[in-house]
Length: 185
Ligand SMILES: C[S@@+](CC[C@H](N)C(=O)[O-])C[C@H]1O[C@@H](n2cnc3c(N)ncnc32)[C@H](O)[C@@H]1O
Picture 1 (cartoon, protein in one colour):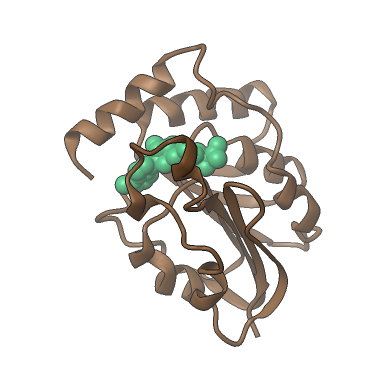
Picture 2 (cartoon, helix red, strand yellow; picture 1 turned 180 degrees about the vertical axis):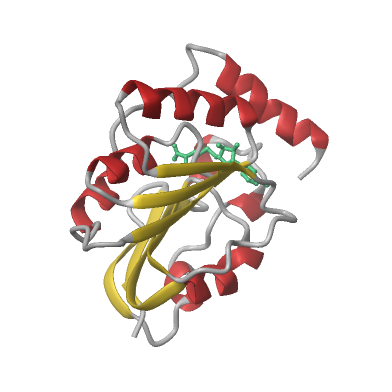
């Protein structure tokens, strides 16, 4: 990621009025997150303000949550402390270069972020029987936002192709978002 991109995210998170400041989990996570068994662990890429990681921590999960924006993660950590939680390990990481942690997770999830080079590592980090939950913008977004970089948008039906042989629990291209929930065999 260029320095300019990083700065753009830092500025957005420094703006108290920015639309990224939503709370509560994405609905697909709330629908499909398994109940936490002892020792359950999750990995989130591009966690932003940690709305999903904090929700999982409230359900007992330990979460490693990565994002490039220090400004976002400072706010996420402050919110964790405010809620008297401790289950999220927030890590400043540029996913252009940062290798994913070498653990197997019960759940790996990503919202509103796309770097196709990461799909093999994402699939590897899910333990057999574990879940991936992925939701991000697809090419329909370009109709209303033609200036967006097309490589940041999914083609319709693209996500399941990164998880061959997995059990598809949910897969859709509704509106501007594509969603995939799959279980590793
Ligand atoms: C649209 S926001 C989504 C945040 C969060 N997943 C959510 O849905 O609320 C995209 C996130 O990707 C992060 N990001 C962008 N490029 C990144 C990179 N190269 N490495 C790590 N994080 C990155 C940004 O800092 C931002 O938090």
